[in-house]
Every structure is written in C-alpha cells, then in structure tokens.
Length: 383
Image (cartoon, rainbow, N blue to C red; front, side, top):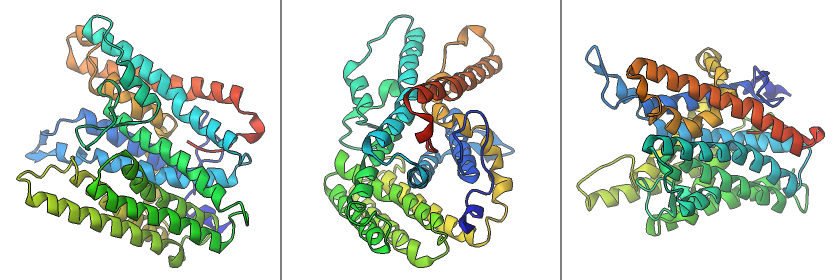
C-alpha cells in the first residue's frame, strides 16, 4: 500500500505499545502530551533575555484539539484493520483503554488531595459519578457544564468528548455498513455528509443553546475530520482533493459560524478572554482547520523534515494518555513533597513520581488487564 509511506514511515515497537501503531502519529501524540504538561508547569510570565518564554506554552487547548484529530484518524484506522466489528468487542476495547488508567488516576488524585489537606477530604460522590459517566467539562471555560473535572483535574474535560466520539463512531459505521458493507464510495459520502451536516446544525444550535449535546455533536465533526483523513490514507487517496476538501470546507464553515458568534458577543462585552466561551470554541475550530490544512500540505511534499521534528515524541508516546490525565495532581499542582524544602529537588521528585506512575499504568497494569479480558486473536491497534 503506497499510503504506508506517508503517515507511518516508522512504527513504534516498544514494549508498552500495541503492535502496528503508526510511528508519526505516535510521535505527535507524545509531543502533544509533553506540550500540555509544559503548558501547565510553566508560568505565564517567564522572561529569558527580555522575551516572555511563557507565551510559547500558552496553547495547551490547541494540543488537545490535535489529540482529537489524531484520535479520529487512529480509531478509524484501527477499527478498519481490526477483526472484531461487533459493538461488544469495540466497546470493551475502548472502555478498557479509557477506564483502566482513569480509575487509577481518580483514586490516586483523591489520595493526593487528602495528603495535601492532611485529612480525608469529601469524595464528591456526585462529581465523581459524573466523571465516570463522562459528563464532565471545564466549567470555567464553557457554559452549562453538567459536572466539573474531578478535584480540579482540568485535563479530564476532554475525556468526555473522546468517550462520546467513540460511542458515536460505531453507530455511524454500522448504519452505513448494514446494506453494502460500508465500502462503496456512495456509502462513505452519505455517512460523511450526515456526520458533517449534523455538526453544522449542532453548531448553529450551540450558538443559541450552548449545552452538552450540541457541543459534543459539534466537536464530533472535528473528530470526524481525522476519520476522513484515515480513510483516504487507507485507500491510498490522501492526495485526492475530492476525498478531503469537503471536510475542510465544513471545518471552515463551522469556524466562520463560531467567529460570527464570538464577534456578536464581543459587541456586548468589554472583555475578550480567549480561553472562555464563546471564543474558546472558535479558537478550537480555527486550530483544527489550520492543522488539517497543514497536514494536507505537508504530506504533499513527502513530510519533509517531519520525522526530525517529531521523532523525540516517541519517547513519551507509550505513556502519553496516563501522563495527560495524571500530571495535574502529580506534577503541576503537587505539594506532597514540599517537606523537602528545596524547589528544584521537589520538582525533580514530582517528575520522577509522575513518570514512574505513568509507566506502571501504561506498561504494566493496562497491558495485563487487556490480555486478561481480550483474546489475543482480536487484539489490535488503538489508543
């Protein structure tokens, strides 16, 4: 397959990775996780030779959007190449991947918060249940949030989106595979048109009723852009404009709608806060459109220089998910080693604890649970 040389030139083969993962995407995933960590541990004002270095690391939201695009690509790639196509098989794989690390992180975050408080704190059962049901979001940033991220672990907001993207993906595949296997060009066009049309309608609804359901459906259109790219890649047609430009056009349209909504809001508000509604949604889709465009352009020049820039990300890729959901309380906001009294030594200790913790989850616990639950013959790639 000619496409194999365009996105996955090298393959991650470490002991923590599942077989067959695309190396370039793995590298990006590792870099994105690393950037989010730096984003949370770097002060907003950090001057070096008169330049505020902190500004460079103010784009953690964009790193999460990159996760969404990569996730859509990887899930479709994995599912298309995998064996188990039943909802039961699909659900178990996705649930294990999300919940095995998450339950450990939620438990440990409560323990660390209790250590910080010097007593057992309120477990916030309602908020915990909401997070386990994937209903959480970042309440400071968006309106009408059902529950906040558990114990202030703000990176958890994106997990709810990922989970519902997973749950929406399988019905879309099943709906258009029932009659013709979902392999014809017509079936693909109908499926993509449905998802992207719903995303546009949800965007319009969201500008009036910014609530959970239209928000998920709107962002599902963004995630689906990764699916479209993966399908074009699998068919060796990633360079065929008619396969990818309609999706890009929809991203542009949603971005324009959100830009207009933000502009209208600005007329009634004296403050422009880019990390809050309605500007944060516009910011997300603007970056998604940019990233999608850059990916199309870069692959047309053979990913020139891409490997050199991104290959270091492979070092953190195997533990990137655990790192993303645990670094907030183990590293960024940690105080459990403050008895040491030396900030440099304390930070080094937090870093070691975080990396070891993530390695134990991703390279020991999760693989062991996965091997026990899923037969080897149906195990396949996936996050």
